[in-house]
Each structure stands twice: as C-alpha cells, then as structure tokens.
Amino acid sequence: AHDRTPVVEAPVGLTLVTYENPPGVHTAADRVRAFTNGPAAGWFRHVNVNAHDHGGHFIPWENPDAWVSDLRRTFHGRRP
Image (cartoon, rainbow, N blue to C red; front, side):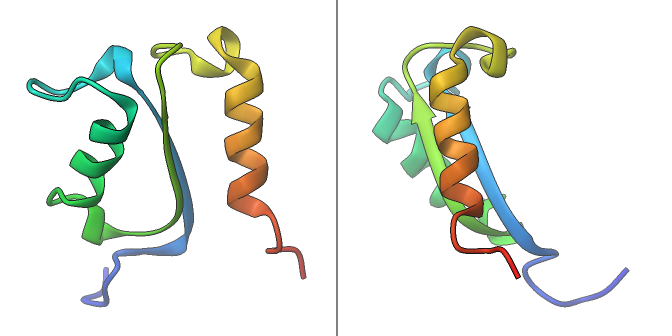
C-alpha cells in the first residue's frame, strides 16, 4: 500500500460501453465525461478512455474492432 496518487500508476486504458451507462448518462461522450469527472478517475493514470454505443459486458466479443482499436491506442508509443 502507498499514499501516492494515482493509486494505479501504470498506464490505464478504459473501454466503456453505453449499454452499461449509469443513470442519467445517454451517449458515449456523456459516458466518458461521467468517468473522467467522477470520483474514480483520480485513482488511475488513464491514457485512453473511450466509449462505444455497441457492445456490453463482453465487448471484445461483441465489438472486437472497437476494442482492438482502443487497445492499440492505449499502448501506442509505449514500447521500450
């Protein structure tokens, strides 16, 4: 345990889906904004946060092209 912030210091990419929106969030842009302005955002060193209108809990299977694109964007330029 440590008291540094963000708690998760490794680069983090998040792929969110509108299927699992919290109440009051209706679009992909709203979903990203809700996370980045929410209380959990400060825990992570997020380098890529994206949301998609298609897909649900199993987004790599339901929307593989979007998920792979997010994965690539997260790690682009981070190779040693």
